[in-house]
Length: 207
Image (cartoon, rainbow, N blue to C red):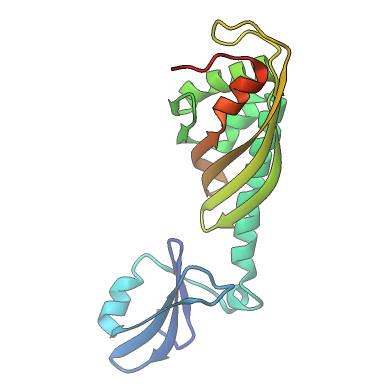
């Protein structure tokens, strides 16, 4: 494809805009976000620039115009995947949860790290024992990453790993990070205040 001044390329989570084009040289701006327009300027040979944009995708004028709606749509789509995950988790719908993850997805949590074969059983146990409900407080999307802050609530209603239920409820702050590609979750990291939960529901802290 012929290089043109003003052209924008997307490579991974980075945007590359041609600021000035000469016969043998290219001045470009590397940006993480086209909405803010903040970035770093570079001056390289045309040959070096062509190597740089190998495997990159040039954006159309319609995608760049008006704040890059295509990128906004991608972010909204990724947020929607995560919201579907939260709704399925709150229902205890394991089939729906599994459908949202890529076959080789890796989930890192407080109790274990592994693929769906490892994690689904843990989620089932958590739902049955604590009736966990996640309420989204804030969602931020950047590239393929979606970060979520929740209020997590639950009630210790059934036995959990040898501990009898107390009937006590809890509330705490939890956070999760997702890597979403092609409408599938490929990675998920989770953190929560397990010590606070244990204290509120009368569950002994594991040493």
